[in-house]
Length: 140
Image (cartoon, rainbow, N blue to C red; front, side):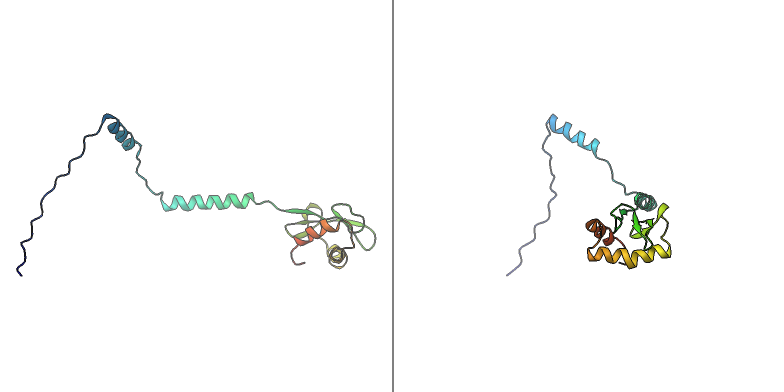
């Protein structure tokens, strides 16, 4: 069977439908509102990311938890084995003394050997509050 001759492609002209004045106005407004989108330079993006990270570091606040004496229940103190109190709280998971200074060796030993076990056994004043505080302490 012989092949039929292929028709040649014809040039087709597309005619646009005439727009109404309202459509012309809407098209004009949309054309004016269109703005080309240009991505910012990579250096500018990196600078903004660094600024955001710096701001986040500055915004980080230290978390303080109040310690209650296991014997008398007063806030911000603990009793030594010699009967004197010393100042203590928990700041960012660490026991600290006045002015957010680290505890002395004797004070830390009192916390480790006396106060913490007393809280864990439930035989102290303010056991619920101290247990919550103790759960924030690192290494306990």
